[in-house]
Amino acid sequence: MSKKKFFHKLYKFHEKSKTYLIEVSLDDYDEIYDDWDPSPFKKRDIEPEFNDFIVNSSEDIPLNFKIGIVLYLPSSKKDEKKEATLISAYQNYYDYVIEKLNRSKSTLNGKIIFNLLFSMSLLFIGYGSSGDDGNIFINVFKEGIFIGGWVFLWDFFTTIFFTKRELRNQYKLYKRLYNADINFIYLD
Image 1: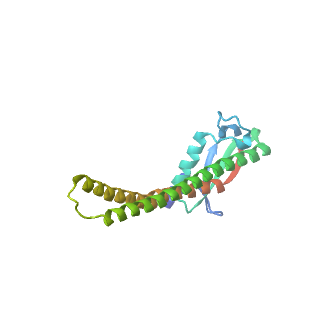
Image 2: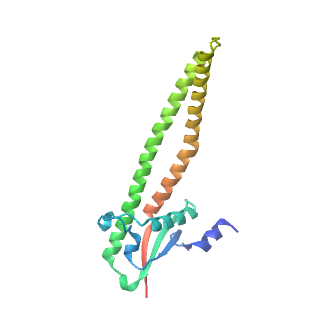
């Protein structure tokens, strides 16, 4: 079965907007908010289970597709003020996550630069002082410098090619969640 058909089966696809819809049934608006967070509604954290569901569903859908969130609620609960508050809290939450990822990116870039410079320094020292001195301790120290240089160079490459890519994908995922349209559908 092709991937596209799989996603059409698992998630509704809105043809006009080319958006996959993540649907959530709720009994009340408060189900989205974390019960343990005493902050005002606009600043409250999202319920971890709701976040996990949304993130896991979003991970199922390829990043090149837009997503939308559809919240089903009883028609007796309709409240436009609470809708606006929920959308604001949702965007605040994912904006905060994106900001944390940006800080992680900055930290990672610093680590990349440090690893490259430190590995080059160790390898430069190691190759600059090559030769057998006959003293076992000096030779072990020189080998340690070589090994350290190669280990930091290896970490430089794994950070660039693996860790940075994973962080970039996470950023795209959360940015897509932040930009997702939220629609409310009320049922009798």
